[in-house]
Image 1 (cartoon, rainbow, N blue to C red):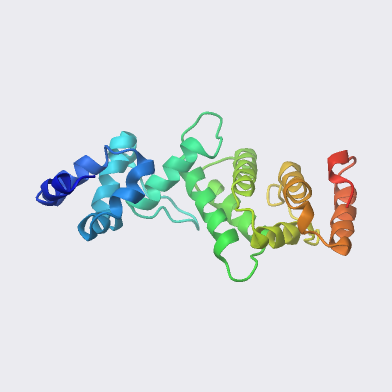
Image 2: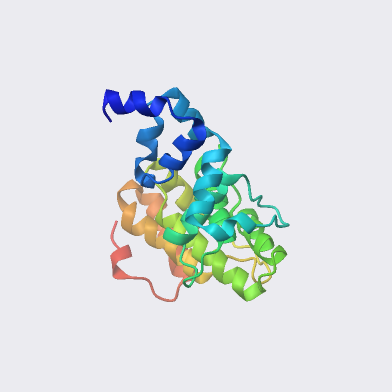
Amino acid sequence: MTEDNDCTLGKFPDHLLIEIFVRVPIWDWAQVSSVKKQWAALFRGNSLWQTALVRTWPFAAEGKRWPGPIPQGLSRRRYAALYVSQHVVSCDGELDELAGHAYLYLKEQLERSTVLPSPGVLHGTIIDQFIACGKTRDRADQLASQIWIAVINHLEENERTFILLKHLAQEREVFLPYPYSRSYKVQWKVFEKLFVDFRDCFDRIDYFDVLARAKCKFQTIPSAWLGY
């Protein structure tokens, strides 16, 4: 961006700047917001996100608050949830804002909590949210599984993620009624991620402990998981 353009845009009122910025590709927003303090303030505020939300998903203007433990949040949060629903979480072709919010909730809890959270509590919260919003038990179970798998696939590959996945794999089995137990697919994804992406992080004792748990959970395991 040239100095002349900077000076020209600097004279525009906020509502015109917002109309310009929401037409800029989303992957450039971080760079745009770092140019001027005034622009950064616009990206921190709600007006820009409300405009972007309605421009990208016009039906979002009619969004209603829902019951349940996962809040909808303001326009920035809603924009992120809809973006996730469209580009990250597979919901059988549906654009489901609630699924996006559940994804953001789960990912933040897993990545930001100072103490490793209880997977059962997190899963139960997501199931309760879907049921509170009218989803059937089967649909709630299906969506929750899709969200867990999407989150696991998008966790950063670092030591914290390894510790988290190992915690999920070594969690003591507790019987919970359907659909409050994580699905077979989710459990498989946890072990697959550990043995494929984090194999080099194991020490010998942990590797054989996690491998033994995998053999107890699944009738057969891939040969790619074997070999310390």
